[in-house]
Image (cartoon, rainbow, N blue to C red):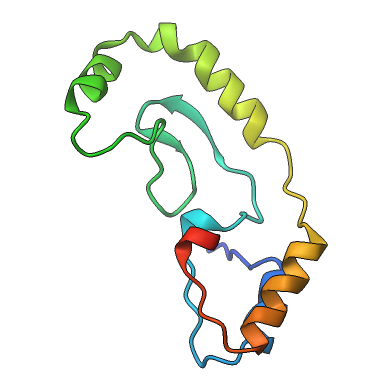
Length: 117
């Protein structure tokens, strides 16, 4: 069994190093991944490698919609899976202006919230 390591993007590492707070926490699902996502093969399998990712983000009270999705034949979902896999294969590009602004906010002790990420 081999062990693998996931490293953060250098810009993210720089942001962490230059941040004034001793601990800066981001939700894993809110930042770009360095490695490609898992291909979607079912409604519960695909996306992020470590954290759970849902095929469709539905509110918790949308039980009926989720049940319809569960009843749908996997073969009927292949076009949607293929489209998501194509989108997932496109690498992220870091917006340098936004990155610099985020670093300056961090240095100025501004509070980050998940709504900005």
